[in-house]
Image 1 (spheres, chains in turn red, blue):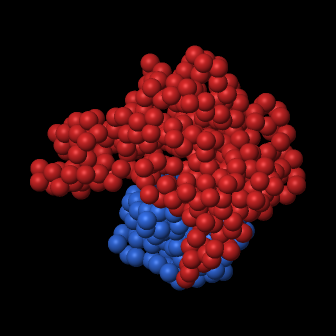
Image 2 (cartoon, each protein chain N blue to C red):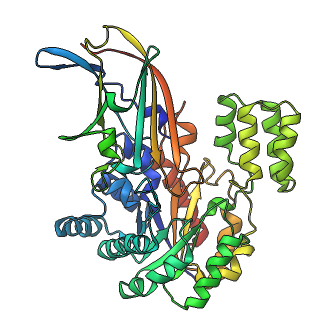
Length: 329
Length: 131
């Protein structure tokens, strides 16, 4: 394995099920991250840090104390842009910039060097925030999450504006979810529990596995007598809500990529992810000289909690163990 | 995504004011994966055994603060946090009869980044009225 500068982190998003039910508090989540051996902490502030964005000095002091107590490093704050805050009109550009500046200031005080930018944020708005981000030593990284991908005109438009702006503060944060080689099992199994037709689900998975002809699926499934649940699955595939991107398609953008969301749906007992071939992807990132964090982001809870007990802690442990193996540390 | 847990298993009971039963209450949680400012919580619909309660019949309470749905429309600071229990108080003079009731619950939130920001989350369950 070549030398590399890739670090492991965990997005606290991963523990949402336990947090929602009050089984884990913020400190429990941080302790658990540290126990996996990961260094980095990513937080959706509006999920686990009540009171956003009006925090006291005391709050930030306690945050750093918490990081110190477990030896973790704050890495990323995930932001949102509530463009419909005023129900009768969208935020103006100036209001959007103002909102993002609050995120920048907050991220800086948390000690985070990157911000996850929600995928619908226009690049022209980000360009207006770039110098403020530079001053605060924070990068604004657009999340590239399915149905977006690096061939999508929206992402290419961002790329163009970033290049023109010339600011080191603008870039991308790809989500491993765009590299689902197989359709996540926990999702098609859930579809079957919700009434999907087993035969059709099998057929759709076969089409998905060859990654071709997905656009035609809704029509075909309708013709085959598919019900609403079948059609929803066909639509998810045809619209690219789940997709397979060859890892090498990311490489031309590497200079602008400073963080990854290590999305996963189901870590198997053998230490692999059912749908996302980490073993194929990580070596490509090492080879390309990626420099930054890959943060575990578990998103299986919502697909299984109808009938199964969710164990996010175990899922993240397995994911981190896999990353550790592939990264060699 | 958290539809199943939107209506808490506890806290479903009649509400008294000045010695009279003025209605009933439900404890509810946000069905989204983060907290929201209240203007982004678009509303609720509560149907009990087929009887539908909406709009001015519903009051939303968190901590010691309470809001009508109309007031929530322009509340840009106060937040309903992720995982936080809120109390919905629903006007129904005389309240509900003791025993089991079928509840159809709708929670509407605004998620600005989605193609359709108006997200409607629904869940139905049967619950026993607490004494």
